[in-house]
Length: 165
Length: 165
DNA sequence: TTAAATGCAAAGCTTTTGCAATACT
DNA sequence: AGTATTGCAAAAGCTTTGCATTTAA
View 1 (cartoon, rainbow over the protein chains, first blue to last red):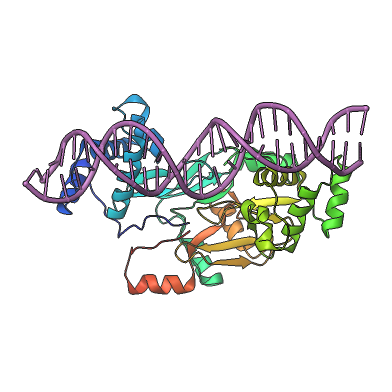
View 2 (cartoon, each protein chain N blue to C red):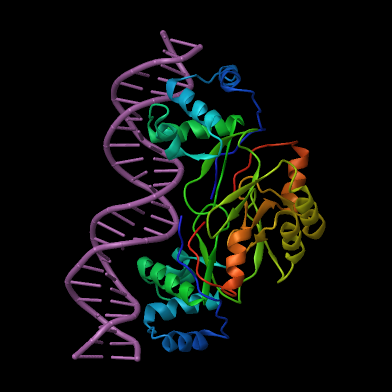
């Protein structure tokens, strides 16, 4: 239960700026590394390591999965990338400052709603007040039922089987 | 990303009542099954399948891990057991109605705070009002920083490395 | 008796690690 | 040239599945 520690967020305007940031820290800009960053910058949603390795559905050449993981780890240490978890299943990665933000994930249908930046401040403030707890929803999102699944839940009464998240 | 569907919660007073519930549904009360239930009833916190198989630190005889998983799955379908996730790492299981409740998990030190039943109603209500979202914190808890780690975070400024959850 | 449940082994999925070969600076 | 990074293979951690055998009812 330990994950690669990330340093302070490093927000960058684009792939090129990211490359500069890498070189500035003595890291190299290899083809595989470039691929990972390009896929992440092109992605509109957080993507899994597997999706990155697959080249985001064939758009870009594939890369070794182990290298992808190693790169994601380094980029995360650098503060350029973060990862989060949409329930069960593989972790998903995103560029810090893009595809970023916090999510509400439906545990029945798997749908997600991205919350605008600051949209959870109210919730965080209340958790701070009630429990002196500094909640963070950027790594483990808020899970529950989306409006339509919640409606379905009412029909069927309490409980009921489901199959997601 | 699919997990065994659970039916309506089935709250039971003790191991014996659980056995009755099993038999009432045509399920058998085998030694392994008994073990799983006994460990869960004895546990004060949710425990992993591995801990159950190990007999909760030697208190009870060990059992096959695959059987433990199969039993947990069936007991969860029955509504007697639930499972949740304290961050990365194995899922943890608890008897419904005991060791139950909702948790706040610290992503730095791994500590957890159990919230009294209903203690998150305010939060849930607010999420309902703001996003029409029916949040559930019983399967994926609220993750963030506990008071002491939050303090440590201030000292070190934004970001900073961590190593847990 | 007979279907549910077990034990063991094997596999699945996500992620990590070792190591010799490669390629960025 | 020197070392960060790669590719491949293997392993680790959690969970599921197949199957012949046992066992509760």
